[in-house]
Image 1 (spheres, one colour):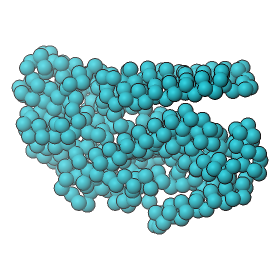
Image 2 (spheres, one colour; image 1 turned 180 degrees about the vertical axis):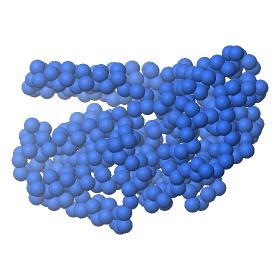
Image 3 (cartoon, one colour; image 1 turned 90 degrees about the vertical axis):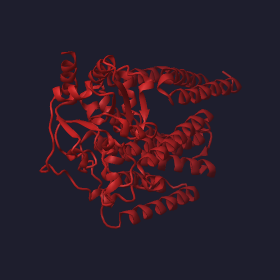
Image 4 (cartoon, one colour; image 1 turned 120 degrees about the horizontal axis):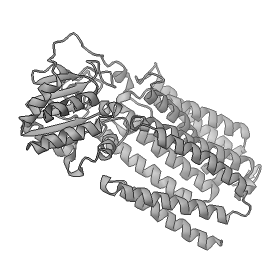
Amino acid sequence: MSHDLAALFYLVASICFILALRGLSHPETSRGGLRYGMAGMAIAVLTTLFILPEVNFVLILAGVIVGGSIGTMIALRIQMTALPQLVAAFHSLVGLAAVLVAAAAFYNPAAYGIGLPGDIKAASLIEMSIGAAIGAITFTGSIVAFAKLQGLVSGKPVVFPMQHWLNLALGILTVVLIVWMVAGQSATAFWLLVLLTLLLGVLIIIPIGGADMPVVISMLNSYSGWAAAGIGFTLGNNLLIITGALVGSAGAILSYIMCKGMNRSFFSVILGGFGGESAAAGGGGDEDRTYRQGAAEDAAFLMRNAEKVIIIPGYGMAVAQAQHALREMADLLKKEGVEVKYAIHPVAGRMPGHMNVLLAEANVPYDEVFEMDEINREFSETDVAFVIGANDVTNPSAKTDPASPIYGMPVLDVEKAQNVLFVKRSMASGYAGVDNPLFYMDQTMMLLADAKKMCEDIVKSLEA
């Protein structure tokens, strides 16, 4: 295959990736977006195989079989609740791949057309070192995020004195090592750079608390894209540059949108969770306060006699896999003439769009699902707000308590509803470790049970 023809196919693949991002921007077009992405990747891989002068197809086929088998098993067995940590794990692999490709290019530059050992082009060395540094940060940062999401380590921020100054010093030292590597083409400088940025990846993520984890996921997604783009420059591969830049910029834009939705500073988060000290000081639960507890029959009675019900899903719904029972409950309410809507907070769940994916899986109509800004004003006109597993995103402390670690974060105005039904397993605080005053308000009825079981019991009561 000629290079001109390969460039044409790469252009087609790039267009497919752009259309994929466009399609994934809305639930109704997401399936089409996935198809474009799959087609673009197939074109890119096949084109790359046919333009290489020497290809060991047996080795490549073996890699595809091994990797494809692992990916298929994971896809078949993964639960929706584990998707955030799966995404973090995949990001770590992208970062590690960037480091390994940079190492291969450094030790065998002739294979990549960037010079000879000890005589590599300066521009290639800059691109290589930046790609390796971002890849190493992505690798260890994603592993820490995975460990927090999986519950292997605490989700609370890890802070210590002079932490930000240490990160700043390591950042400056990273630049120094890049200069040393470019000037002296030293293998010592290369590996010191890798080790330093591996450490920096850990230090950037550990001070970020559980409440900010959705931002971390999108931020690491951005990092993985920029790492790929940096390596694309080293390899002289335009497609890798384009796709890496698409992923990097899309992740950065999403991170910015998420930060706005949480009233977090974008630069504070990407530079290592500035303000983590206050989050670490957040309080726990206050289980001794008086609250009103109800049962499924009480909830069914209130919602059956309501004119308008707004459902607020959260991570607890995902854990219980309650979305199908919830949709069945909503369908029964609609048959009785109740207006039902769903309110989605930008950071509900543990990754962007988590709740939207779950509701779409349960075939909830898209026109019933509203973002926070679209529906917040309607709570004051709502008879019942049904909160199912959403804690921090409904916490009024974000608006009233300056000492709270979530203060300033926009939340759903659930407390303005005439009645609040709050489904959760216990009175414990949410993922951010902050008690929710909504539990103890006069209009709130706590439904302490597994979310799926509670929805099924409410369905039975509605049918009876």
